[in-house]
Image (tube, rainbow, N blue to C red):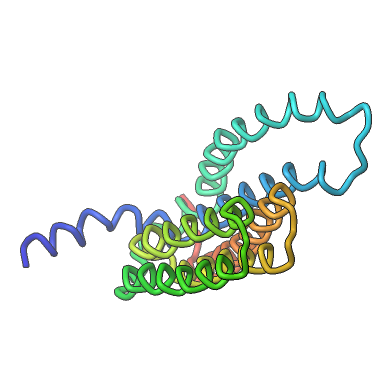
Length: 205
């Protein structure tokens, strides 16, 4: 019992950090940015811009992580730290570990069905990555009190399945999975931010 209590206490800072929805929102924008950067070359016809684009994109993707940290800090300073409930603990989902196991089981069945139709492992790469990300979201974000963690995991796997089922190319497939996940997290985080601002009064002075 003591270990369980210590584990609960150790998770409180992370749960408080996610209570305002800002990390969720910023994480979504980052995934969406990655999806757009990977998807543009698959939609726009190739031209003289192709080589310079791929020289710049890796740097932009790397810098997006630093930009996300900066944006999250600024948004918290503006919207969270001066409000009465910014340290409020969001409730953890006790079923989040089970959600990860359920995702793994369903995903195994889906992959087995695709492999039985003579698809190669390379064709299943977007789905495989989507499953890994979904498991991390369901378990990691769930333990940190993000109530929509299971939903984001389900969206990620659904997109991965669609990419494989429709025989979409690997590059465009990754763009769809990351972009779709980013869009859903941005909307969910934005809704949580709006609710937080509406229900927590700002302290002046």
